Length: 266
Image 1 (tube, one colour):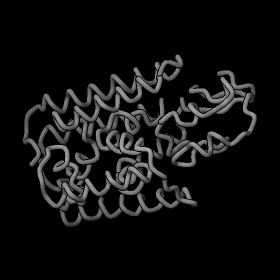
Image 2 (cartoon, rainbow, N blue to C red):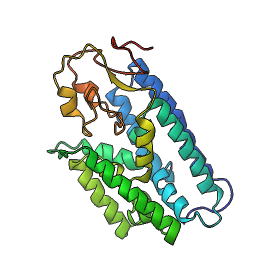
Image 3 (tube, rainbow, N blue to C red):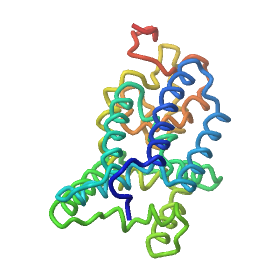
Image 4 (spheres, rainbow, N blue to C red):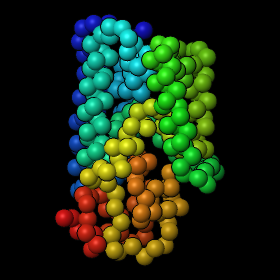
């Protein structure tokens, strides 16, 4: 049920919002002003945007694009493709701001995880990455060979358009799981998440540890994806800020470009 040929103002608004706030978010991170209040305000705006205009809903668009690869697609899907490429580039530059705060699918899971209940963490952080890679191949295969969008069964569209259906219940179950386990859709299912992971590893700007660290381990314990270690790649860092919030030494964790041993920018 995607719009056909012709420009999609709604989609352009969503993509423009995403691009603007990736850059704004990076600047706020860099200046130290990306406070917890700012984070949750941005998450709530993103969620409202998802319910109001179903945009920027790039994971869903990706599934539709793959399923229609052998047929003519409208400007909406072509615009989504351009948006994806731009966000991949922005992720390479600034980290996973889009996944963290500007994708409605990720935003609702992030907010759900705030619910104060005991959390579940996997002992093997590579497991979600492997599972998501397999799911990615299945999505590509089903789309290219059978013209089936597997993500259409997850219920993203039905949830954000408040359409009661089996898909709505599937996504609602994922949202309930995300209260206990951090971002199950993003980490196990999202095909774009697999691609963003690749671009985030060499990202030029990310959360880095300086020589002020006292090795207390609090950031590792706080990180829901186990990516806060000194040698971790940050491929699964959603910039949630929990590591910084829990660090007892100011200046230990900074959002910066590639740093020297002393923690100053090169």
